[in-house]
Image 1: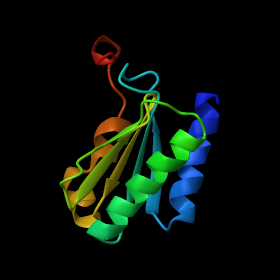
Image 2: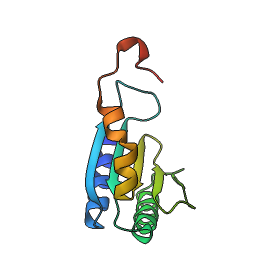
Image 3: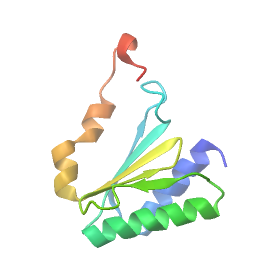
Length: 115
């Protein structure tokens, strides 16, 4: 699968499983850590856990290897590392507090662009 197909697959999987406010940030000209960051909200700690586990399972079935979940013990945040795509799944309060969309969506000066 190409990265654009994986991105669409992740977005669709999150949407089908009732994730809220799904947002995708293009990181290709901002950082080497990943090509895209996808941010979504869940409605409860159980929903966050379910979203992350469903996403991980479906990615593995599609042949996307070496994916993993970070934040397994957190009730407010999960991260699915899909190698070239980072997926943050937040409880809405924590998402608003951290506001990572704003941080990563702002233009970055060229000399600071590569992290």
